Image (tube, rainbow, N blue to C red):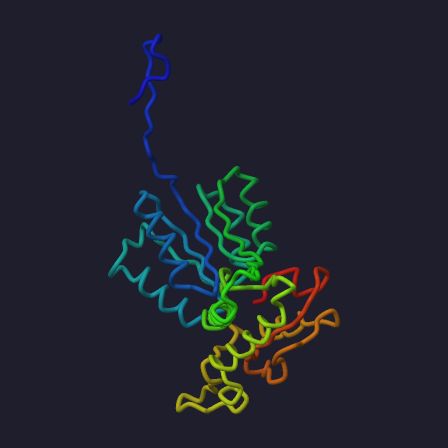
Length: 265
């Protein structure tokens, strides 16, 4: 307790209380982390939870459903999982809950916010971004190029909201940086490792150390972002969209390019 006004015989205090029912809508790109992190927080605060995992990563979703609702680790009265796609998510949003957590794109984020507004339900929205990296003449150019190349592709094949999205380079070091970036990409992800993929015993085609996109649809979307306003200055010739593979590619674009209007995954 702490006094509000020393001249009046009243006091105020902060009393943390659980919200109640928390709806957690999980994306496909980090399905385990982005399921368990908000779930642990919500349960620790005394809430019960409804999880809506992504239908795009069906193996992980199936595993998490079994682990979280089987009764071995969690009380099924405290955690329920609703599987499915957009239809199921839309139905969930029609019902009143006490707080909603959503991680994903801005378009669906707006739908979630509009649905929550009907019940004045508070929302937690993590909607990604464009994540520029800025390189000035004062930077150590080889180190900057290496770190950007590593951060973009090694992290889930670029399918991360915190991965480098585009680069702003001071004009005086543009050519030097570009050359170093190409060297870094060649070193980390040699063309020979993904231009001639290998076939694993499982039947999966592997493209060296470069991972695949989540689906053919998303691979096609990324390659389609490279429109006539973009100049390809590295790679871009060995995509295998039907196998969800997008090769390391660097383009020069402008503010009006489609690739600058949304996240690149």
